[in-house]
Length: 335
Image (tube, rainbow, N blue to C red; front, side, top):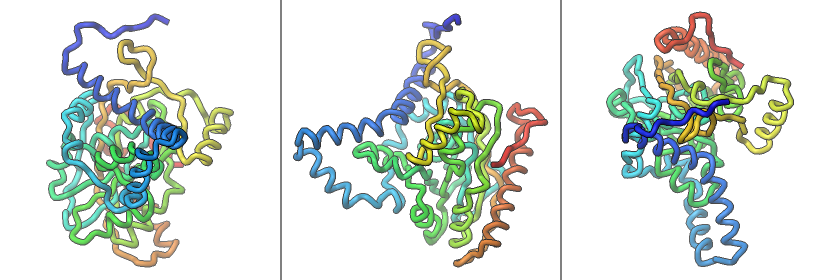
């Protein structure tokens, strides 16, 4: 295979975009495990003056990810994130105005490999979110294990990420006065194993906790489809029933997160690496589904609203797929 190298005369802006995405990928893949490893080494080698104060802080701060987090405007406004957005580029599209006196749950689809569109649009401050949804604050919910990584959790909190636990989501959408949007990548780790270019497979049939939370607190539901999310990486073939998928499913059940085998391009060549491809992402926010508060929803009410949500999700995909180069015959596969 002939290696295709990146040209030397690339514009400085594109180089900055590459650096911005590279640092994000490295943080995503490496810094969490590294922070745990460093902490263990400090304990083994008895650097108590370093780890004891931090572990004390961790004890008192443990529930912050479930109570709205601790975002830093300075970090969320880093110019680095502008270059991150422009690398792909990432776009946010609104289909209908929302009432800022209400709280909402955005169901984000698909997960892709790294949920790039969710982070770029709803976490840092260089998307069009504030212009499109004035009066709102978005909270991107992620796996609680991100907050189990010492020191790295402080960075995760600073960019506005919060836990996806039931307690955390309930805290956000029960706030009086409205104006809060909980963004949940509903397919989660399991869905990342179906993130193949040209495929639109969503893991949604068993995801009903968000519906119960919406009913309990009267939060409106909004489907969100991020076109282009699955085009950023190529994943090793892992059809259901294959030995690769069997191992991945078992590891996902044990660890709580998936291990997709993926690649894309490199920094200095375009054939192989962990840098995502430069593919445009168009994140389309659909119409809100009004939800009447029901403190103790029945299973029948949960099923009915869940079905309504899936129907609206299909409609959103069908209405907009043609705008983003998706063939007419392609449809969502809901698992």
